Length: 415
Ligand code: HEM
Image (cartoon, rainbow, N blue to C red; front, side):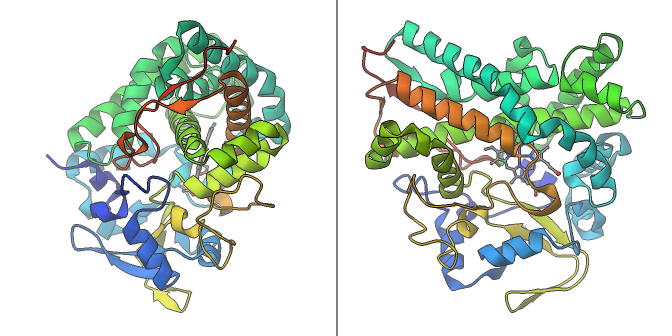
């Protein structure tokens, strides 16, 4: 059975993802080494094919804004041929591709993106803030009620963004075990192709049932709103859009909360600054996004023609992988890039990508992280790790980096 990295038509050697247990917040060593050598590198994939890794900040920004780079890697026959046939059938099925705008180029991408940006404005996300606050505090209450220790991932980091995106979309939160497990399979680098196919099929069937229900029983949620706003959207399109939002909307933020907490606990002086002055939180969130760069293997693009960048010519039909962790620590862009500084002035970073695909949910993610960190630090005094830092299980095996679990405890006085 083949590992699921084949679904990306891209099998990366482990040195691109594995982090040393004593350096959990630093980019994988091999990516960092390349970063020190220059901004753009031709690299060998496990199957012998070549790809181009971008480690320079300015170069990454330019490439992500360049229409000669496509987000639809299936425009390359070479890539399509590398995908195992059973998966190829699914991935290239027009029903699956309809609405999956993260893999589309302009003008198709533009049409869907426009439909959705109206739903994700800064104003709309601020309006959601009181509800996010309630969700955060109710999970902290439950943790405090149950004792003085917990695994932060299942108790807080994962359920908070899961519940928020469920409510926003109109997905029943009771169904979370199902979709969280499938998401985990879809994002696992070493999952087998058969399991990926099964998880993808089940998730589409799950979402299709919801879309059909919302057509007859609309409610005050994003899915019903989309159906009402754009009557021409087909079930296939709505299924893909909703699955994209559901998957992108909980795994990423959950890992920023989990890994972000771990990073703060390992940087006690920064944690103390943040506790002492919560007004630092919005800036600290940006700095954590930069410092941790959890999307650690991408964005990935395909060159449609020869592209010259950083003194290198990347030939047409090449895979380009932006190394966000290294790009966000480019010493040409950041002073002391390897230092976590919660008061770093005006942090701008590529953790949400750049260009037309820049993260649609970034304002929501910012609100969730700011509320989660502020309330967690306020309500859980003496928060500490319950195991040696080197034993925290890291998500080097996943498309989105983070921690699989984070056992913590806190002082009893909390309430
Ligand atoms: C796109 C990161 C949270 C929905 C992206 C991209 C990145 C990213 C790097 C660009 C992908 C590319 O260029 O190919 C993150 C991080 C998050 C986060 C680090 C949390 C801290 C969210 C949330 C949602 C969301 C909460 C939904 C509610 C999306 C969608 C896209 C996207 C729909 C595709 C946009 C497009 O293709 O136009 N995200 N994301 N993300 N993100 Fe996020």
